[in-house]
Amino acid sequence: MTPTVEIEGDVGRVILSGQFDFSAHREFRQVCETLIADPSVKEVLVDFQNVNYLDSSALGMLLLLKEKIGVANKSLALVNCRDTVKQVLEIACFGKIFTIR
Image 1 (cartoon, rainbow, N blue to C red):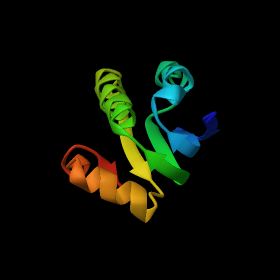
Image 2: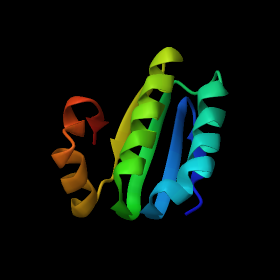
Image 3: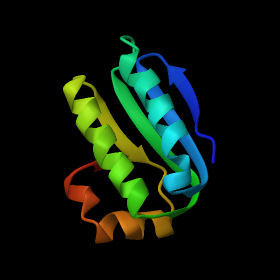
Image 4: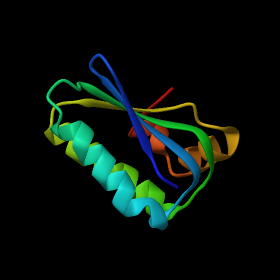
C-alpha cells in the first residue's frame, strides 16, 4: 500500500488502499508528517474508501497520528470507511476517540 495525498484548500487527505498494516508504517508516517508540517493544512482526513483490511498496528498508527495532530492544533477525521473497516474501528472503540464520517 502506498498512501497518496491530496490537498484542497486547508484540507489534506491521505488516501489509503488495500491492506493497512505494519508494512505501510513508513509511508503512512511520512505522508502524515508532510501534512502536519504544512501550515496551510488545518484538517487531515484519512480516507479508507479503498481499504479492505486493517490490523492492530494500523490502529496504533492512527493513535500516534491523533496525538501528533493534536500537538499541531489541527483536526483529524476518518472518512469513507467500508463495513469491514467500521467493524474493526467500532470494536476498538475508536468512535469515542476519532471523528468518523
